[in-house]
Amino acid sequence: MDITLLSILIFLAVVNTASFFVMVIDKNRSRRGKDRISEGALFFWAVFFGGIGIYFGMFAFRHKTKKWYFYIGIPLIIIQNLCFLFLLYKFIDGIGFSI
Image (cartoon, helix red, strand yellow):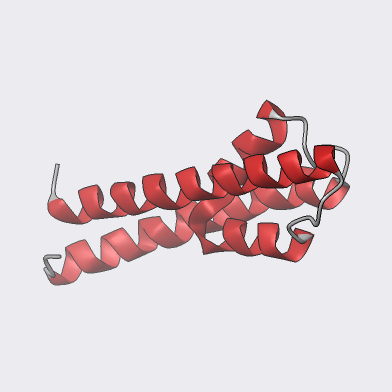
């Protein structure tokens, strides 16, 4: 496995783990009636390549699954993120950069 692909996969793992825990924190806050993490912040995490973690958190904790814009929007953001990362990988690989 080349270093570029490994770097992208490590980046995705870190960001998605963090976004999954953001969902855990928000679910715990909602159960306790405390101040919540805004939906905009959750979408920010998804757009910032954390969509997979948000999506897993949605279904692991039954959190935000009834909101249509999460149910439809997060998978669309995941597709967009993966397409972007694929193109980035092909671009970096094509011009011979090494990270």
